[in-house]
Length: 236
Image (cartoon, rainbow, N blue to C red):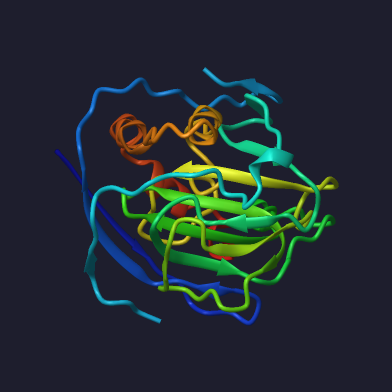
């Protein structure tokens, strides 16, 4: 069994809502194949909250209220993630039961600077009851009732699809990663391929990414430390 302990902290700023959440959860050790990150241009898929102990499982769904109008592929530029293409204004929902650990309501990305920590524009991260972080980005707006530290239910409204941050087309960036114990952007943006999970969830199969994320942590033991030491991490 691998014990995952996440502590996310930061200093609140005018532009963002920053979480400080500590979550302890056990994820079953299930053999899984890890897909390493590529650096090529396009890659094919192969306020402090008290410590809380949460269940180790959750149901799963595609993070859109209406999946029938959405489409996605099995590639992404540079690193593992999935872009769901759908019209701006489409309702974004939580893919899991969990806790909101980051809520970013201001689009602070500046093309002249291109800070990688702000490329997601308006975004939300949910720490699922499976111990996995689910990050959705490029939102047009974030639900006004959503707050950091709040328990969220699968299918709960998070906001709407937009094109904030570094993007020109309406789409939803979906990323799956382990939570890190501090501010960072390079793990949050995605470390395993979401497409096969989205495909499964759309068909009703409850395929969990927890084992693959656990294996990724084993294979990349310094990833969170390295990411938090990045010069741009303070802006994440």
